[in-house]
Image (cartoon, rainbow, N blue to C red; front, side):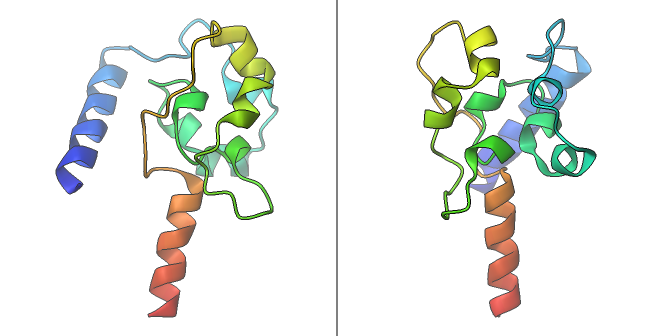
Length: 113
C-alpha cells in the first residue's frame, strides 16, 4: 500500500512540475465554493490540484455530520462545480487515503493508543 501511495504522490509531483493541473484555466472548486483558508489548508482538492475534486476521497464537501467517510460522491452529482466541469462523466474516486476524514481517523487511532 505504501508503494502505491508513493507512486500517486510521485505522479502528483510530476504533473504539478509540468503544469498538468486539472484546474489550470478553470475556476477551482475552492473558489466556486467560497472555501475558507482553514478548509483549503485541510482539503485534499487544494493539495492535489492535478485531479478534479470529485475524484478525490475525503474532500471537505464529501464529509458530513453523520460520520461519512469521504467516499460518497452523490453530493458531487448535484454540485455546480461538477456540473460545470464534470462533462456528465461517471464519477470514480482516483485518489484514495489522502482525505480530511482519513487524517482524522489516523489521529483518533494515535490518541487512543
